Length: 112
Image (cartoon, rainbow, N blue to C red):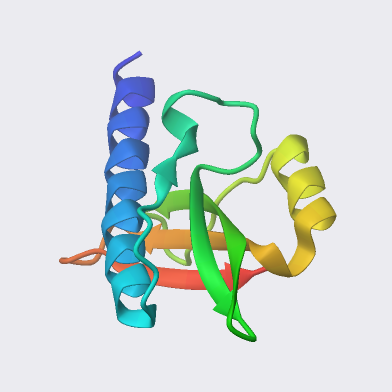
């Protein structure tokens, strides 16, 4: 139970860092919206954060699944639902992998 609790705390911390990272990124590209922390309310959406991007001056959705790990080499698990959502949304789907062993944590971003 303690291990599960520690993992949940780490996961929420990584999601919060993604929210802050996305707020800064959106500000940098001139989008005035804030990212939405979908994972707090819906564990079955297949992603944790709804953000936005600009493609050819059009605002598009950016779906982000957040993972955190302290393992070396970096490794994490993807659920079948997360993978199916990633396949469905393709280039709009991103993985944020946080290396929580680093101080401060390091973000690695991978597009589907």
